[in-house]
Image (cartoon, rainbow, N blue to C red; front, side, top):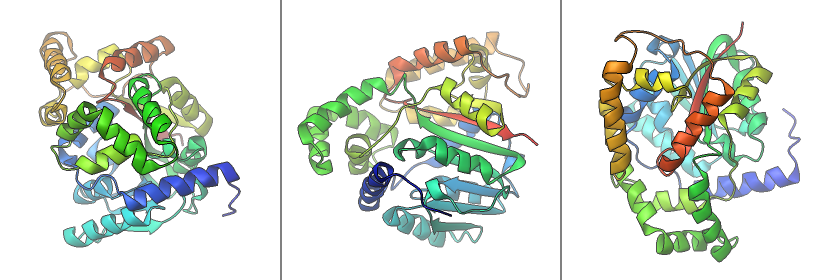
Length: 328
């Protein structure tokens, strides 16, 4: 495939790939605790990926790819440009003995994978670092079969703002030197890092500092924008995490998978208390147990209201996820 990236995007790409090669993220993640509830909120069923061909676009260290491989995907293909991250992913594959997973060095903005090949394709926390996230998203949809599921996760333009102020201070003080930015982040915002460190149960202490304060580039996105991407690429809305309709929160907090996810609120006691309160409300106000999505597409007003609700919890929920089905 022709490499027609602009010099500016190539510069962004080189800086991002370089940082994550030197500081792979994450080195440890308790993936099981988060995936069950997240997928329920997205309307994703095990049948969407079990026995199916799965793509991890921007796989990094491969923790999500390994999860799908363990859950019975027939084939999991991870692609990334960061050699340091890919080395970790390949080691995990070898240690786990997962012959159904493979990792390739490939540019997600010049993706050479074939059209309409994968049943289930996702990109989690990557496209916003590329300089041209819509281009990468179009490839994500292109390689997915009609009727297949596409999942994308991006930094949110509402809830990411509070953290971005801290990042801007570190960038001002540290300049272009990533290590200096991280040093300033650790010096000025140790409380922020400790909260996030608890979320990862103390497994990624130094890596968190680089992922939060050392990143070379990021873009912020709204749910409304991603819904427009869905319309441009022929995707039908399937679900969102966190939900984008108030009634969908009542469904979410009825699900038993929340109990496992609750441990990711370590370091965020207020958010945990609010979530536990929602569990009680959902018991009386939510849909009947066992009711199944699909979730209706959220309105503009519902998107804006939901994203405003995320703002006070932006340190924990600064990234949002949406799923769609490629129209036949």
